Image (cartoon, rainbow, N blue to C red; front, side, top):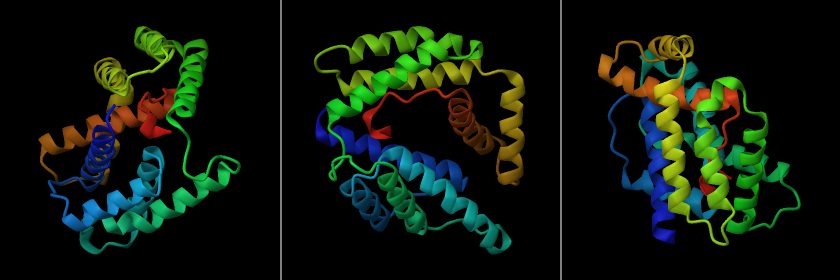
Length: 212
């Protein structure tokens, strides 16, 4: 995938996650865009950025008076840089400028094989997608856009197939965290949160290199 499209995916995923955590419509400022660009330049993996954002929101909710919403993505930066440092510490011995695409694809392939060999029965409906991903990753040059399309398909399937009890659990949590928001907004936040939590619970691997 061209570098420009890679960068666009990184920015879009961070913006989407910020909106879901904030729980209200918001337009990223030019300062926010520069902040995201600095994380991308530092080669902080997408999943590490999202982890740092989640930590930042948890801390902010405890301190913010009257349920005041976070007004800028820059509030997340200290936690993201901390998460990035922890990630580098865990990966001592890796190349300083980040892993090559080929090495990342090998890691994704290993995760896909692990999932196919040990996935729980509840995740069986994802088998075909991950077998297709394994075939794509087996090519000499696995196209990034194909992996991202498959990852989007995974999210669509989880949204459709997740059991009612888990869905209700997430909706209850979102209702408690974002009470007072319009029902449509709560449904949107719950849908994003439900996919994320379901993937975590069942160890469903991501397929885009930006998560590694």
